[in-house]
Length: 164
Image (cartoon, rainbow, N blue to C red; front, side, top):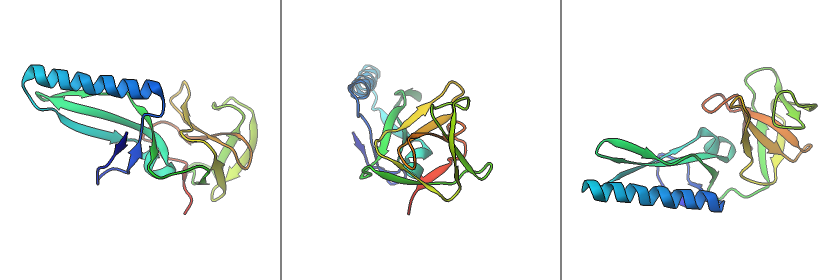
């Protein structure tokens, strides 16, 4: 699904059958509720800051009927037109860079430290994963395959940005 809204970065969702099925079921649900209430639904979209800053993140769709909010679960989203490989620059706000790790958690082996201003490459999107502390991890392929912390959690400082 491609979403066009001047206040949001353009993005696409529905990369998996599960996402497509979820969106279809949610859309049908909104339509059924609106029909039963003899109301028109007002639709909304919410996109994580990740989509605009690193090109991949999460999007959620919703509808409002009789002042009640109905929303879908977050789905993986990719900035429209972004094709791998994707270049990202390290912009950590704590310390002088990011630790590249073997696995997506802070207990995993350190592979190297990537200083602020250096770049990484992502060969496949979507590439984010959340750990048990809600930290968002990004799988990178270069300079070495591994995981970097994209953000401590959703809404926090994003440690990378698209290369210019």
